[in-house]
Image (cartoon, rainbow, N blue to C red; front, top):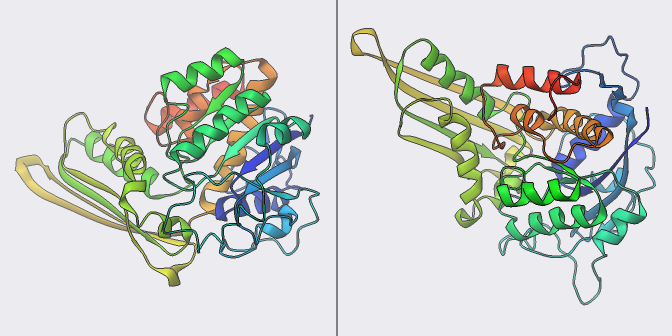
Length: 360
């Protein structure tokens, strides 16, 4: 199959896991079981068909470096699971400094000086590198930056994969813009392979399916990377809380008191994320049921396989000339898709889309 030309906006921990993952599984056999991938060969595309062609960031420690080197530059702390990476021939370019950089994150992100460095023309770079897909890895709370990159993708003729909790694919206006441009869009807010949201959804669905009335529930998350440091500013969390909360409450057919979201930043945890889920309910005879679950994962690799599948599915949409929101792909891979369904249904939709049985 043809290569899939991918540009990345934001060279943080998630991008590090994605780039490493493509190299790690480049020689996987189609019969291999690869943790985190739906299929090694997805609709004719192998993992190794993904080629990175452009990368944008504001960190002066990353700008000017090859992407293979920049993904390991501080403050990135994603586990290194490849022994070595070849030079990718992709120089990390200075991105515009928009609201992706919160006021409390300028030092941590090592933001370049606008007096010394000028941002590139993102649209021009996307066109010049002939990018098929732009993957948005901006920090949580990047309202303006996400819309800047979505607009750039449209102007450059790229599909858009929105991995963060800003609403593009699930927003009617933006979905319409991509449809009119003849381009696919997938999002919003990527689900991890086995993360807090997917686990909480399964627990909630189990309670509902077994007839247990949920009285209250919470999900608290702690971590030690810049993602969690960024989220210490509550004003950046509005869409994040909406995305994570609706992902769970959409499966419960009645109102329930709920609190979901990041709760603290603990630097020594690094890229490790710890989640605490609590559900209180009532079963037969109104007898109390309480469940506590703790989940510990390395956060960035946990979503990289999902994004690899989304990239390949989005390229399939490009090949088929499908424009607008990818309903099946988004329902399977994202917390806040245009249409929310139970995960087994979403997986079935995803497979049917790949097989050509569902249009989108």
